Image 1 (cartoon, rainbow, N blue to C red):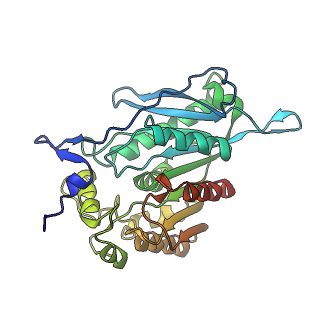
Image 2 (image 1 turned 180 degrees about the vertical axis):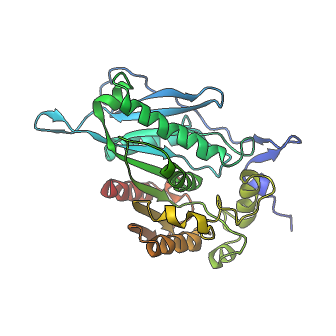
Image 3 (image 1 turned 45 degrees about the vertical axis):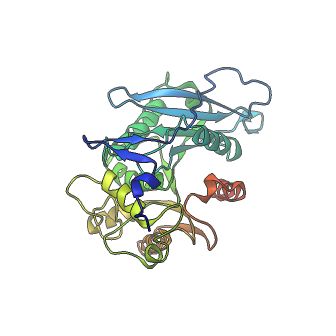
Length: 319
């Protein structure tokens, strides 16, 4: 029997300098630009540089049809969003990521600010959290600047910001929500967290990890490699970036998180961790909405349109 190669499974090859060559070729999509929408176009998008040195930027999506009350445009919530990809893959310019955020913007409806954060292993944690904080600070600047970004100035409700992430993006949303408690964000207010299949870990294996160790999409050896590539050198899987259950220092901050929506699927090796995480939030007094489905696997919403629609409905209800 041939030995399972997690690098091959992940479509990457490791280079001598510690970087990886990504072998998946995903078509990229440009933003529509800050233009009048074409007939039938439900969402327009544009890119804004975040940190030129780090080559980070944000792609902003806004619906073309804006809800109104009493003939004045109703302000839209802001979803600051972090894509999945196991720390090593994907971009907000990737076709399926772009489409997903366009749909989110149209259906919630919301201004979606999708963060092009740096990838591991070239940039290890906490670089991704730093990029997330840059994005939140950018939003705060727009709120304070009368000449700030026109889309946010004219259409956004700064008092209704949400951090939204899928898989490792949900890890970014959670850890960033803890970090920003020390920052002055007024008038921006983080109203809640939306954690879709959050990617957490730990040294001690859970029952679901062992039971689903050979999962065809997200096998345990691949999960191990992703953490090896993402965590700071010399740390292990009980580091607070990976294992939120062990860090006593964060308990006080967890209590101040505001509302949380956590989504998960029974066929995901991470399901036990996600459920333990929800339990921890509840014990700390956080208002949590847990939406767990027995059927489904990690990132099922990338390929199953019905699941993607269900998740979209959960988010819409929550926001």
